[in-house]
Image (cartoon, rainbow, N blue to C red; front, side):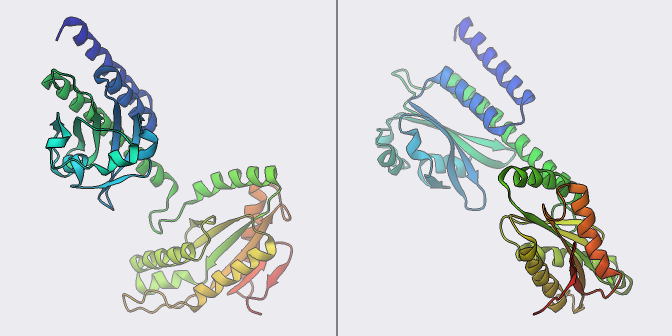
Length: 348
């Protein structure tokens, strides 16, 4: 390879290094990597397939070139076709003539209406795990595909692996900052952020939304009787049950201690009271900690407040929902109250 080609490679790696250190946006970094592959190796079509670990399938994260749009919904099982073979074996493959390779999977050509004559594919690996496959179609000239080009492609795949793993770490860190360890629900920090977002959205589109505060009655006695580990397990069970009984658009939070909050977008106060009643009954009618054989029964004090009928500010809404809950807590317990309406019946 001449001096100008070596300088070009150095430039490629310098730019990729900058992309990795300057951005945590996975798609942006991966596109930079794939653009450099296109500049240096000039295939007809190039693609990055990522691994769906649960289904053990490859899907096209990025595809560029002829027929790329037809690949959006295509999935390839591990071991199927050349890309699947690379994912399974963890080895690169260079196939100058696909018609002579029994591993070639022709259904992709049927989808794209292209003729794949040659393929170069390398695994994207982090430690011992295959994260995906980079695949180049029809990039070989009469001289074939050189070992130096293969080494360059494998190095670029390593950059892609670093970018993917970095993005996953950032996602995990983000999840840790907004998630409660004990219940896996969102935490109070995220509630404050989502309330700001929901107030903005509801103000802009003239929507209503509601908050439900839930406080477990006499929860301390569970800790005192069965220990804090069982208390934490109970909170986890209740948190899971609350989340399971919410709509997909609703958000459930552990507010602290034995308090939970449910944010109900586009929900009036009357409808929110209905939801509060159902959650109140759920907690009161369920036998908790059945697996350890403790068979705990609990009740809850529940408060409701709504935007904009009760308040238009985050702090006041939180205060009013909390105040409604404490109205129950400091009187009857085991009931539901709403801001401005007082205690409401829990059953018809």
